[in-house]
Length: 315
Image (cartoon, rainbow, N blue to C red; front, side, top):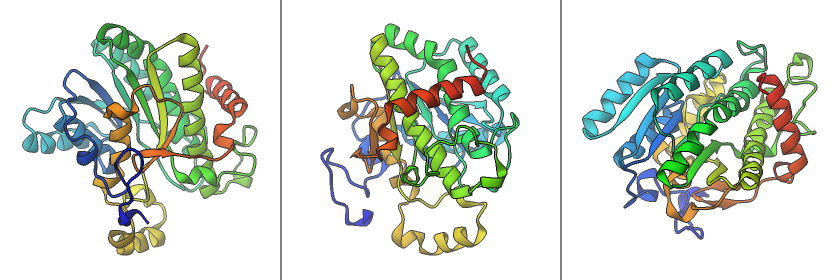
């Protein structure tokens, strides 16, 4: 159990917090984008990045909410460098506008945290008519990453520092549909299962990191891509399941991680020198972990990449 605090090879455990795993790390000179930064893991990641000197761009659906979060963090950390930009992962048009505006701003990009997500939603379609969990958790982050890759590559060349892409997955990747990714039934409501669909999207997150890594190695680009499971945490991600959410909130403080512990792994993977040069891995509790055989299937990763390219209408 996480609360026993067993430490792995990194020296950290499931009980380590985001502040603890970044203690002593100087993030000045780094710029990071964090999606879903107004609550939960995204908010804590933004706060800790700012605490370590990282310039954070909050990619958020509500600029008003993002601005309030920024103001709160600035009260705690007056020296924080934080910007707020609108990003709605339910809309590829919004993703494209965000990327275009970011590129036009001339900002560098050292770290991309693909954090935002939804969990086990009732069947619904995104603004682009794609099943919501697959669209939000994987496809929009896939598009966002691709659109910002040239900016990351330029930053790596100019800063001479490794770029890092961090993709939030989940242990739920172990429970997707039987075939893993239902390429021909993504939008088939008649066979939709909210939990399997969530597992499918989280499997896609790991496969995305694997294929990015393969491509970076082929190009000789000094950018890493890793996926992770943050742990079982109480956030608003279960808002579509009232009874489960209520039970989780009652027992959560005894059995589940808090947000400070939940954000630790993504902060570790994004900032810690131990992770330098490591790519295509799956992390949990600020240590390497072993995903399923499907998550390690390179051919499935390539197929998902091409499928994602076709759905996002990229060349």
